Image (cartoon, rainbow, N blue to C red; front, side, top):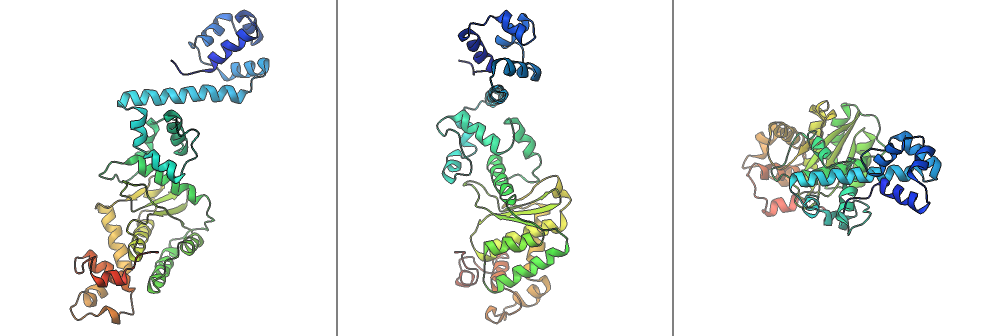
Length: 341
């Protein structure tokens, strides 16, 4: 059975009200043949004809447009699924839709009807067809090896919507060093306060969202510029204080070096290595513990972390573990790079 269009509704309306095609065509100022083509779905409804039908019948214009729009969107989805040899359920599984329902990220119209779930997901992602998701993906600078672009797009959209609730002041590059110093201060105190962190970043011209990713995703963070407003998105990937501050410093490094590039795309940080990611990592490590100090003192055998007063101890053990000079499982690492509560 084909999908319902307004032509089906109009045909029934004419029958119920005992109105002939010839009479109705005359009332809306078109030829009987044109009306027959509309009723048989050989001709599309123009805006002028929709206005005339609504005026003559009292059927709300919005209702006609919604019915036609719904048909065309569902047709687009059907065409895409057939082309990709996917069932509705197989396509939905790409988005881990059961987790979306559980997390209530999206208000679903009907969680028992797959086509309605697909439409709600597309609406959430602000596209009118599955094909358009490929256009969104082309604006991502990196792709994960696990090829879960759907999860990435959902996460980016969730973060973007969170930025709309934030009051972000004007941004200047000078604010970056202030934020680096602020992160150092909090790490020295062994403090991580998400609400205060977001507030301070907003006051310094950067939108900040810390959002759990979806299962199966390898996202660590992202940097984006919305018009002239920089936005940093990070996850709680490793749930330790230095890990999350490192992810934050990494995205600040992108803000410092890749602001213009991010105007046209999202810079996504995964757990793999790429040139631009390596540079951002190097800058983040330099901000954590200055390289000269690290190599002149920290890596020496006589170095004692208990005597450290210049740099956060969590940052010291984080760098040492990254360089394989300390095991992640060691008591020293566990002690100084604590788990977030």
